[in-house]
Length: 367
Image 1: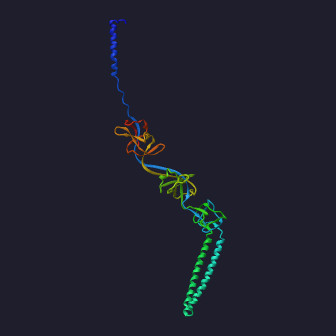
Image 2: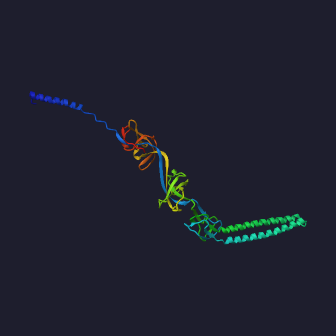
Image 3: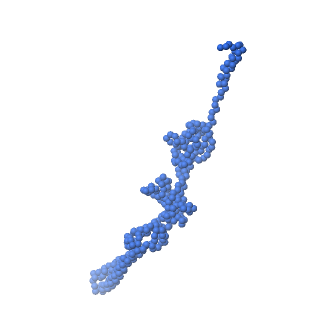
């Protein structure tokens, strides 16, 4: 190595000295990085309220009172004056059966009354005659008692004959079937020429007096239905034709084929357009249990149960709290337990938070 002159050695020593002290001086001048600011989160304040529930279903208008009308006597159907869909008034003739046999019975019963009346007249005369003879001492008490007995039997015979006559008249009248009330024919059970038995349904008549909306409700919603619940009802084809009603009857058992429950709603003054058979839509709105409604984004699905982040005060750190969910909707969830009124719940970015993390509230609102 070449030797440096005295001046060069001094310059080199100065450079090395400067370099040796430069590194530690630079290290001493470095600053620690500034802490990150608290994460800004969007929250809502817990405010329990009654859950507002609503539901819709379609059904049909049916008569509350349906009469299966038939003859009180048997016979061959001679005429049927109505068909399905016909409207009738009270007293209108619906059908008749052949009256010939009953006319013959009436004639026979009338003859029986005439004979009984003649027998009574004769017995009455005999009783009067023997009564006078007994008073004058020209006959015995036994003979008079027999005449009195014959008179009493004749009176009973006349009463029986008159009862038979009334029955024959009634049976003849029963050969004509009249409408017991106003209504519409919804079913027929016999055709002309057919022999019908007493009590057999010939015409089914649905009364106009009271009408129901009849709906089929799924098993998921039937638990919410209550007798007396108010229902808004409108025509499916004409939504502006509306009325109100109340749940009158809830079927205790599901239909074995459809699995739905039949619910009958009494219609309040239904408009004429809501005729029997019309398709209607029913809607109910009511309040359920007291719950907390949160955006679906507030739920943290980790572990065995859903949870939410609660902002603790006054240090503004987050804490995970398990909650009980009532039901999920497309955008919201209803929380049935786990939250207290006034607590703040984080509703956005819940998957990027950690236990005890410090946050800043961006916006607060009531839910």
